[in-house]
Amino acid sequence: MAAAGKGAVKEPQNVVHQNAILCETIRKEQRHQKIYTSYSVNPYKKIHVITGKPNSKHDTEEGEEDSHFLSVINRASLEPVKKYSFPQTESQEYGWISKSLIERDTTDKRLSFHKCNTAITKYNDKAWGEKEQRENMN
Image (cartoon, rainbow, N blue to C red):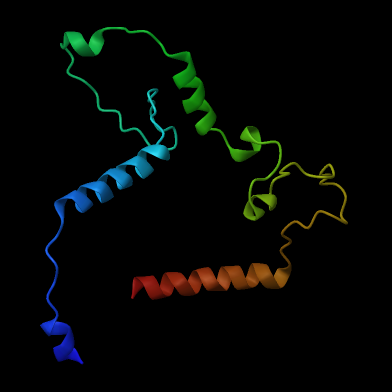
């Protein structure tokens, strides 16, 4: 079977048909192509600012301030809670409401569990510290 495929003579390429295929391909690309004429900096990409030369006239000149560009950059640097009114992903749902639901009262012993040291824990802390000192001296 492989021999039958090798023996087949390939027809020469027709330049007119190749040009028609190319024209059709270009027409299809242009049909779905969108041309953008307003360009701006991607606000989600970090900009590396490099300081200029101290005596350079170009670096010390003040220019116009683009308010739209500044607002886009400032909005991109905000936390998601300040940008959106509700979580955009499932992962953002955890911790979206970061303020505490009840006021924290440290005098209420039911909700406040501070670290308590008993006589045994104080003794073990002291013994552990002395053991560490002995091992470090050797």
